[in-house]
Length: 191
Length: 257
Image 1 (cartoon, one colour):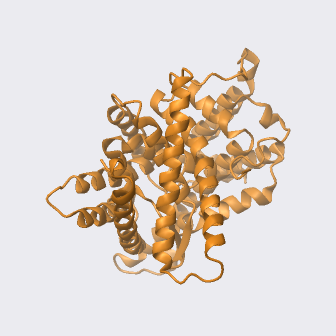
Image 2 (spheres, chains in turn yellow, orange):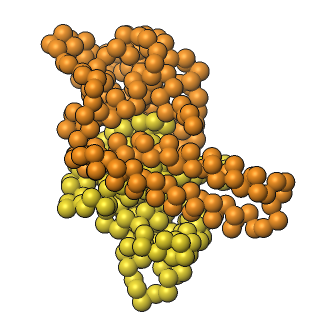
Image 3 (cartoon, chains in turn orange, yellow):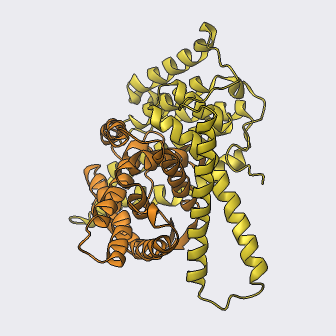
C-alpha cells in the first residue's frame, strides 16, 4: 500500500509533501502534554502493525490500523501517521522518502474518515467501530486509485486495488474487537 | 531485551559512515529527487546513476546480499505497478500487437529503475548511520518540533511494544501449552489489545518521569556534530555531478553507450 519513489508523477509527490507539512502544523496546533505520548505510542503501533504481513492474491498485504488511530487520536492522528510512514520508509524502505507526503496524506485521510465515522453518535458503537476500520483502508485505496489515474496508469491497476476490499473487512473486524476490548478495559482512551 | 532490526550495519567503518548524518540525509534526498524528476521513458541516464549507486555501495561495505533482500521485499508492488502500465494500454482500445507499445515499455522500465534506485539509496542511508543520529539530523534540519518529539518517543516505544509482545507471548505460551482450545481470533485479538494498552501505560509513565525531570521538548545530545567548510566539498561536487547528468540531453548518454 506504500507508494515507492518514481511510481507516481513527481509533481503530485511535490504537492503532497507541501500539503503534508501544512497539515502537520494545522493538526498539531495546541497539542496538550497528555496527547504527546499517546501520539508516539500510536505511531509505534502503526509501525509494528505494518511488519505483520500475510499473503493474499499473489501479493502480500499488512494491517494498517488507521481506523483505530483515527478513533484514538481524532484530529491528532496525522502527525502520528506521518511519523510512522517516515519510519517505515527510512527503516524498511516501505514507501519512498520523497513519497512520504503522498503516503501520509492517503493514510492520514483514512484515519480522518475513521474519526468522522466514530463521531457519528447516532449509530451504535459496534457499527461505528466497523465503519471506522473499513474507511481506514478504503479511503487510502480510493485516493491511491485517483493518484495512479492522474499519473497515467490505466484502469487495469484498479483490479489490483480490489484485493484491499478483503483487507478492509479484516480491519473492520479488528477495529470492532479492539473497540469492544478498550470499552471494557480502558474506555477513556476512546475520543 | 535486545533488538537490532533497525540499523544493523550502522556500526561499520567506511567513508560513508564517517559523513555527517545531515549531509547524508540531504544528499540522499537530493539524489532521490533528481532520479524521480527524470521524465518517463528516459532510460539512458540511469546507466550513470547506477554506476554512482554501485560505487557508493562498494565504498559503504554494506553486504550486497542485504541490499538485494531489501529490494526483494518491496519488489512485488513495484513490478506489478510497472507491468500494469503497458498492460492497461493494451487492454484499453484495440490491441495492435506487442511491438506497438514501445513507449509504454520504456515508461515501465523507468518506473522500475527509479523505484529500485531510490530503495537502494534509502538502504544505504539507513545502513551507514545509527538511526537515532538520523533522527537528530532531521531535528537539526528544522523538522517540525512536534514531529521531532513524536519521532524520538516513537523510536523508544517501538522497543517497548516489541518487549511487551515478547512477554505476553511467553506468558500465553506458558499458560496454554500445545494447541489452543479457544478461538484463535479472540485470543490473538485480546493479546494485541493487551500489548497496546500495557505499552500505553508504560509510555505514559515514562513520559511523566521525563516531564518531572524537566523535559521541555528538546533532546540534549552529548555527541556534537560540528559542520566545517570541508564537509561540504564532497556533497557539493556530488550534487553538481548528478545535476549535470540530469540536465544534459539524455540522447548523448544513449549515444555514448
